Image (cartoon, rainbow, N blue to C red; front, side):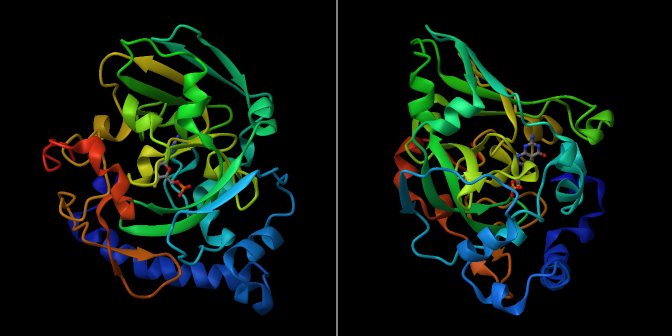
Length: 314
Ligand code: MTE
């Protein structure tokens, strides 16, 4: 991501090992006892997050092939959320200033029934837990039990017209609550986009929680996207506007460096990032790298890209 300001030799390969060490040290320092560390992710998560409200989850599905869930402490302290700083531990330290109530998301553009959704009404609706793999373009990955609803079910309420071919998403932009938006690190507000069929795919989630509780601010409270077959930066956080559009919308990282971050951004081990390989990844908490899977291990999405050259459309 913003490593473009670093010299090429200082990239993520060298970054990740110290981060892994740092994370294990941090877990010890955080006061979690040895017993809690030994618990599987979900139990540890609940112990670690008593202040976050629990969610009513109607259905649970493991869609990460039984892989071990990453512990809550790691997932909530190793974040990218540039509105709150560009170091991995900045969002956990700084995102407390974000006010997540009241919160509405506006849905408009090419649809017959534009409107707004209130976060509490969304949370009161039917929620599912889905355990997904989540991989960052920086070659680290995590396995997270997200809670939310299929984005497609949400979008259908607004009746997209036949002109709607893409969906554009926008994060809140408020320098009072988001200290780093005072600087031109990125173009604000943070924006992302999906093609309509990607947005409607049953794997794509409008996420309101993780580990059975509402999202911590640093993870994108009160609602964010989760698109498990794409690099993490497509998962836009703290969404305030969703717009159906006819033309491919701009995306923040593509604006920053179009040759590095394409619109599609599918996890693809065969397309290197211009400055590093995407063939392998390090699961946070593990020492050794593992092979990265095509579409992050979600081959069911391949038909969305039939006939497309995925080296051109990276
Ligand atoms: N959304 C906003 N608004 N701002 C950001 O900086 N970072 C993206 C994405 N969504 C980002 C964002 C990137 S680069 C990643 S890898 C994921 O959030 C990280 O999500 P996580 O903190 O849940 O791991």
